[in-house]
Image (cartoon, rainbow, N blue to C red; front, side, top):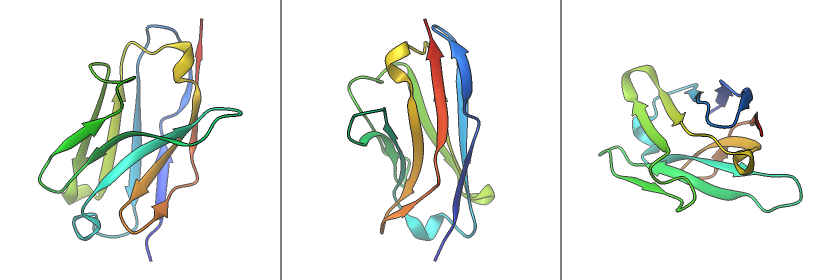
Length: 112
């Protein structure tokens, strides 16, 4: 079992930046692929970005060029750097790990 705890969400104006962190209760190396999902009100949860142990990344088309996912295995932490934020990025952001582990979510609100 592993606990994932997100932090770094908040309220930001359009064009601004936020950095989300996801701290795991044990080694993330063993979890292999980790990522971020988001869910906006009235919408389904969607994948935002994923990263493997080897550093391979994937991004949703809607965030490519604006968001960057990274990981620090020594700190058991995954990050999501979000730049040029748009109101449509407003959602609860969830950390995810392979095998179906989820964090509790952190709210990101982008005002226009």
